[in-house]
Image (cartoon, rainbow, N blue to C red; front, side, top):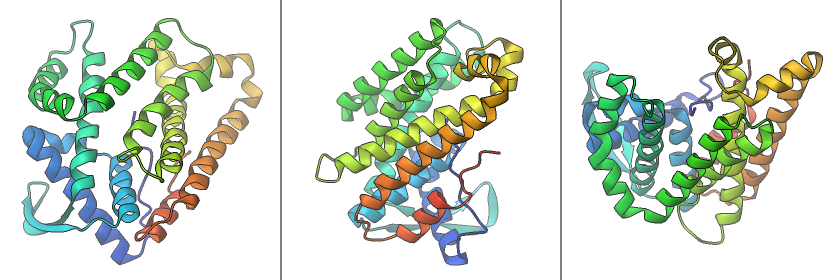
Length: 267
């Protein structure tokens, strides 16, 4: 469901592209330290965005690491790692573990069940380190599953659960920044859920899978596209409004380009 924020290579300068890549590589390294080489499969740009945001907001020092990447052989890659990287990687794994659990709850898909089992030890360590966040996330996942089971028709309700989940992830620390961080995560999460439903509508229709946008399209097909674009634009605007209230120390321009440029893919 994650993965709808994209680094815009046309808008980022060469130096910003290199920095973005180093943050992304840092997340990859941290995921690999948690679950081995398969951690590379968990990478997504939403989590990289959060690392850069927390790093720039809290002015975190960076540990530079040079490493050999199986995906880019022949030259050592640069990775940025810090406390935000370590935190976000664990939230990334927490979400992925539950995604796999949900995908295999009917006992099917042996490969995903095996993968979830291989994440179990790391997941239990996350539960011990972040018990309150794990409890909050698991409750929100349960609500999302219940909504899908009853075929909840109110898009705002279901998207709000995802928004609350991302809000939890953004709240790394409880301080004077928490209101704006929470709001930013909330609207980003709503955007991600809505964008996922929008992108997957055709496939979900074929599979008769739950998608709250399907009813909206069936009831008023002429206004469907306008509704989706207005809803998505509104969520991005609210997310950006909260970002503007944060007092960033660094990386503000890079993050602003990602938020305001056509890095939000709605096509």
